[in-house]
Length: 477
Image (cartoon, rainbow, N blue to C red):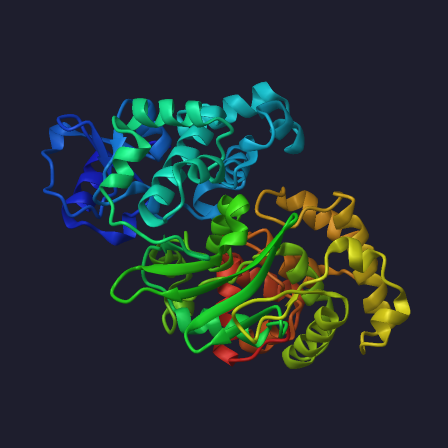
């Protein structure tokens, strides 16, 4: 990514939070790189170098600031990063993919050869996929050493390293101090059954609106709202637990509390939480593009999905019924076929059923819950396709391929596919134009005319849909 040095320096001088995570500034005289919101004295412009990502700064020999902590910076939204190969690879690497598989395997997963993947990542970020993954691991380790009481050994494996020796050597060479040295500089913490993390965002942020949206569509027992806090159960692979998320006072950030049982899948938990709350979006950019449509609620975000399959099933349940009725059906489904789980919260009692469980469910099991036979059949078919890996429902999936695969399934039409794509793939330009709420908000019932009017909001039509629904304070999804 090409950066405008003059613009970056002006943002640095103002410590403009809207640019936090959009770039990093490295100072030649100190050998340190920072976020643009760092409270350290502003360096002279001739001493500054600007980088689009932390890995590029570290490749050039700079180490992260211990004051502003670059590992806490917001990321880039899918629209800003683009939906291409490099952006998809970055999201998988961010979740720790290269700690489990190699570059060739990741390339195969993304439908390309290894050489093509390396070239795309190098062109987009200035570093190789391996270097990108290495920086992600080191920054996560730095974060764990700073924010938790985990031992150095625990930090090593939780951050994706398979060798203590390799981790300590890389950490010392890159950051010019050992993991133990960094730990000594922090306040001593007692080991705990829960872990706490900070996830930053670029303001503004309408937390109440987002929380209202999620709470109104929650499957009771799986997720819930507790005043200004969001709670949910979590299953990633064989690892099960829970998270609790709430705003941090006086800061553009959220505090994420999670059960220590989720430590082995920590990168995935943090990445999914960021996507669920749409934390990486530049709202000012979208507000300007949407114009008058966004004026009443300029900080309205698009809710994502912690579990794409869960949201997809909930979407099918919501076809042609009210939001409340769909949530009731989802709650019955979770209570009947979901796995019970113990949590500190009485409201959280179950994990959402897996694709394998729902694909093997008898139709009578589903219809006995009040689900119409056609919907039940669609849920089983969708579950089989997801379980077999033929449909991907996460941010790393290719949008057009996912849309085509979804619409090929019986019972999934344009509305369902668009809504699933908007939330599970985080696609900013999805637009469920056949939705009754959108038709009412625009007073337009001709599909072609409605799509023509929506052209002005590309490539942010998902956000336009949220504003249209917000204008009615009710939706049909």
